[in-house]
Length: 590
Image 1 (cartoon, helix red, strand yellow):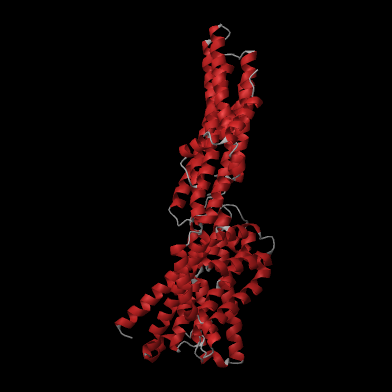
Image 2 (cartoon, one colour):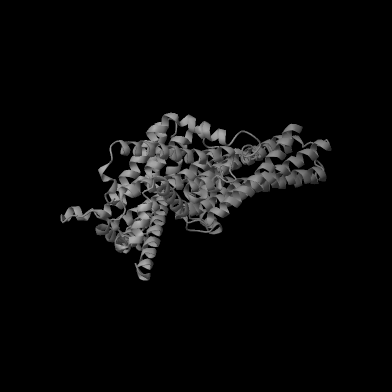
């Protein structure tokens, strides 16, 4: 092979790896995090976990991605170590689907319909369709499908280029001599392990081996141990992802390693013992792509059936390797559980990462709401423990904003679909409103403390007016937070009229206070405290309005916030005026 042949092979390898990456990315975006949520939820039995792990990996075309995701699940406390063993085994089976797809390139037949099954026959059509979807379709689903089609076409083109480039190597004695050396099981395992550890993809390394089969110089005797090593080498990705993770997360990565090590040792013992007793005639035959796929699949199914009944032993072995102790406790209690789920490993699957962000944001919203409702109670009946609780909740909400905001910023740099971008934008807007609502809760707590320390109290009339105002504020808080949790667009349209009614109440309460002040029925000091309380209530309503308006504006993707409000409150919208009128009748000051 000359220099140009080497360059052609390297180019083919680059196309192959890039095509695999593009196809996997398109499949991941198309799933929108749904596959990962299935992994999280449907693992109540070992066999179901195996099937689920196999199915998800077959779709996203990467056992490494599945195992890294599983390590993240364990690290964030979403799953227990015992739940992930079956998924890891299933992932090893699922990854073999790629080798079967690649094996189609070896189809040779004069029959027209059989030739159509050959990827190089239909991948140009897929590429054309995919490019058409990407360039001309506005639908996100079709664009994602186009990315998958183009990725597959690039993958198969790379495979074809590699196969063509290495064919001349069959006549190079040095090359065939190297492959003969790999017939030694130990050297073969090491070679497969190193290759896969470097490119961090067993599917890709098996594909490279299938391409080498085009030379006709790769015998089954050389291929079998290399395939065994490739299964061990793929563990490096999960092992790297376990660095700095919790103790159980690192144990999950070890389960993956032990499964492949023990499975390889058992398979090779059975295989070579049987070969010694009755030599296999095919060992010296040239391997083809389909044969490589078959060996890859048989090994993983064999290892799964052998070790699944002993999955608890694998778990125990991992626990013995990483023992109980102080080391590795990071993330297992120092943070709130809702923040533990913001694992950096999930960033590689943006759809699922956004779901985790939503879960954390809903928990943050609950803390802000609890702080506000407690502080409103303190105005009328001060309680030291509840006041302390408000402070704790406000600090917790601040921490949520810092951690969640930083995670969302990291996520924003990923390749997101239009829907995911909208969700991310909504979350970034919303967490700021939750944090400000908790700040207002703290302000109300301070007002309650001042009333307590100075032994002050509102007049009966002022208390009645404040109660009506508070009822309206509670309603807008409950409504807007429900809008955020459920993304309920119809309910969101009812928030702005309520905010308008609260603004009217605020103005009327200020007028009545001025009248009482002029008549000497209220002191200036009490007036300042009342004004401080009602202003905080009014601003809480503003932030509730933001939550609803942001959802409507981002979902409809037509207006800015101010433009949207102008349209909403315009004369051409009878619904808004009628809603404000009804709410004015509901919240009547005594």
